[in-house]
Amino acid sequence: MCPNPSAELLDNLLTVTGQAAAVREEVRVWSMSGVERVAFPDGSTAIFKYAKEPFDSEGQALRLAHSLGVPVPQVHASAVLNGWLGMLMEDLGSSVREADDLDGVAAAVVLHGTRTAPPLPVLGQERLRNLPARALEHLGRLRKADRWQDADDVEDTLGRIAQAAEARSGGATMEPFGWVHSEFHPTSLHIGEHGWRLLDFARAFTGPGLLDLASWHGTIEPPHPVRLRVFLEQYVSAGGTPDALAPRGGLTAENWALGWHRMWAVEWFMEQAIRWIDDPATDPAYIKAIRRHLSDGLHLFEI
Image (tube, rainbow, N blue to C red; front, top):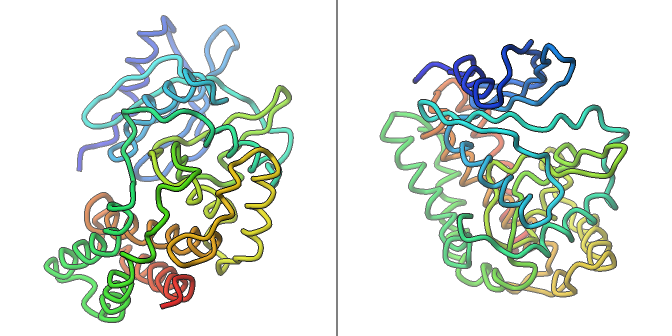
C-alpha cells in the first residue's frame, strides 16, 4: 500500500494557491481519507481534505454541484498524487446547530431537483438489480483468499435476494431520479450563520433519490419504515416530487427505499472488505454489519 502523501499534496496545493506555509490541525482522519484545518500566516484558514481511491473524484463532484447551483463548500484548488486526491476548500467554520429532518428534506429537494451531470456514475435498474449478484462475486473472492469461511448464511441470503431482485428493483428510475449524494446524513449538512452547505460528495452518483432519503436516519438502529414515510411526506410537502410516495417493485416507497439502501450498503461493504480495505482483521466487524443489513433486507423486501 502506498504511503499517505498528504504532506506532499499540501505542499503542491500551497504552491498553486501562492501560500508559503500552513499550520495543520486534524479534524477527522482515517485510513482512506482525512480532513484538516490549515491556518495561514495572514490569519486566514482553509479545509485540507485528502482521500484515496475510490474517494478521489470528490473535487470533480463538488465543482460540478457548485456549477449547477447546489450549496457546497468552494474548492480553491485540488491535486492528485499517487492515487490520492488533495483539496483546499472553503472553511465553513463551526456549525450553529445540528441539522434536523426539515433541513434534510430542504437539502434533498434542492439536490434532487438539480439536473444530472454526465461525469457521475449511473445506478439504474439493471445495476440496482445486480447488487446482490455483485455482492456474491465479492464473497467468492473473499473465500478464495481463505476468508469468510463461516458465512454460508450470507451466501444463502444473498442468493434469495438475488432471485427476488428482478421484481423488487421495479420503479428504480421513477422520480426522484438524478443526483444521489450517497452519504446523506445530518453530519453531511453544515448549518452555518449564512445558511447550509452539503458536504462529502466523494461517492455521488446518478440514481434513485430515495436512497438518499433512506440513508438520512442512518443504519445503526433497525430500519423504521413509519419514520421514513413521515420523512418522505415532509420531502413532498417541501417541494419534492409526489412520486417519492408511490409504490414501486411491489413494495411501499419506504420499504423499497430502505431495502435497496441496505442492499447497496452490503455490496459496498463487501467490496471494501476485499478491494479497498483488504484487511482480514476487519472481517468480523464487516460480517456482523452485513448479516444485520441482509436480515433487514429480507424483511423489507418481504422475501
